[in-house]
Image (cartoon, rainbow, N blue to C red; front, side, top):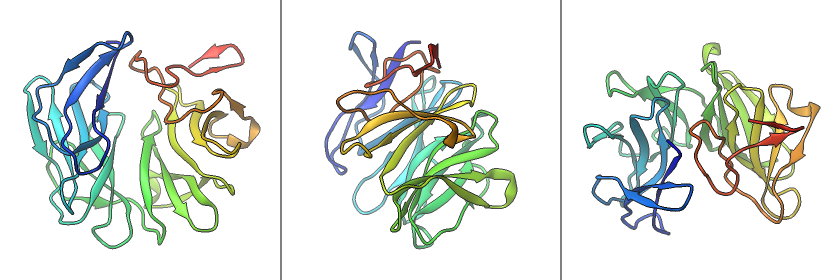
Length: 241
């Protein structure tokens, strides 16, 4: 399935329609009725879609089932629940929420059962990026006033313990990890404009390669063989990930 799912629209409050797009730019509508959708993320098995519905002052995480063509609300808190990220087994959805004050990391079972659980607590706003392929770590973005937007890693089995992953004087964001868990791609403005860089993982300080030219943002790997602008694959030392 070499298609990319995305949403059309430019502002947070506008209603948007969901569509697939293939490598040639052909669009195929998804049957969901237009809403104030944002930040769609396909489940690991490709059967569901987690996304924000940001209407009015509130925002929640919703799940679209492709086969059943149903849209189900996952979170119900009056605060803002945004930026969904699937666990590799598709059983949990992590998200950012300000339900207790600062926007921090939470998760909930993807089938809607059970209660929302807090993953981390910080005085700085956080938002999830992606889980490691083995599900033991959640990479996230944190807006630290000392280092702008940096990247951190949360150990799921360590009761909320997290540590910086990339923390510089620049903005690092929009992290993705290769399917084998050995490479990170991310966006940084260290050159004066947004470009995409790749580093080894977990030893992020042992190498760095800029893979975009004249601007790049929001890298996504090729686990779905999709043409995702601007970079569908990451090539480092002749290897494509």
